[in-house]
Length: 297
Image (cartoon, rainbow, N blue to C red; front, top):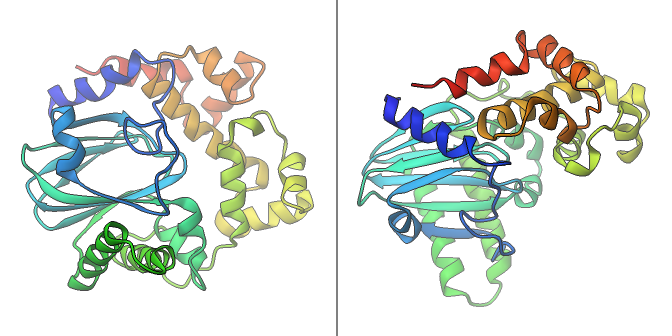
C-alpha cells in the first residue's frame, strides 16, 4: 500500500471515539431487506470513490469488480481488486475502499442470519467465510448474483423465498471459491462455536466468565471447553480471550480510546490486568501495538 493510502486509512479513524458501525455504509436505519444488492456506482461516487473505514456487525458482503480497480484494507490487510474479481468481507471486519473513478460492479450484503441458515453444510460454509479473500467468480456465480439482484428489484410472488434461496447459493459458491479455506475441506465445525462467537461480540457480555457463556448456551463449562479444543486446541477461556484481544487490536488501531478505555469496554476493570493479558496474547503491550499505527508515515 502506498504511504498516502496508509495515512488516510489510519488517520481518518484515529480521530474517532469508536469504530463506525453501520447496517449499510453511512446509514443508521434498519436493514432494508432480506438481502441487499446495489451497484458500486450507486454509492461510491457520492463519497469521492472512497469508502472510509467502518464495519458491519451483522452483515457479510460480496463485492464484484466488473471493470476498474479498487484497493481495500480489511483489519489492516491490503487487497488489490481488478477486472472480474470477487471480494468477500466477513461481518465485524473493519474495512475501507478506494475505488478508481467509474469502477463498475456490484455489492451484495447478507445478514449473518442468512449465512447461518444455510443447510446442510452450514458449518463448513461459515468456516470458509470467516476471513476476507479475493477470488475469480465463475459464470454460475455471476448468473446467480444477477438473478438475486433482479429478483429483489422486480418483486413478484414468493420474492423473499426466492431471494433467500439465491442468497444461500451465492454464499455457498463463494465459499467454495475461497482459494485459502480456513480449514481443510471436509473438516466439521460445531455450529455452537458460531453462537459463542456471536455472544463474545455482543457488548452486553463484556466481562463474562466462561461459566456465563456456557450457561447462556445451555452447556457445562467442560462441554464448552471440549468444543473449543476440538476446533483449534484452545481451552474455552483461551478461545474467548483470543476473540476479545482481536477486538482490542481493532479498537487500539482504529479509535482514539485510551488503553484503559479499550480495556473497560471489553470488560477489564483493571487496566494493568488488561495490559498483561494483551501482552500474553500479542507478545507486546497495547501501547506498543498502537504505536505501529499512530506512527504510520
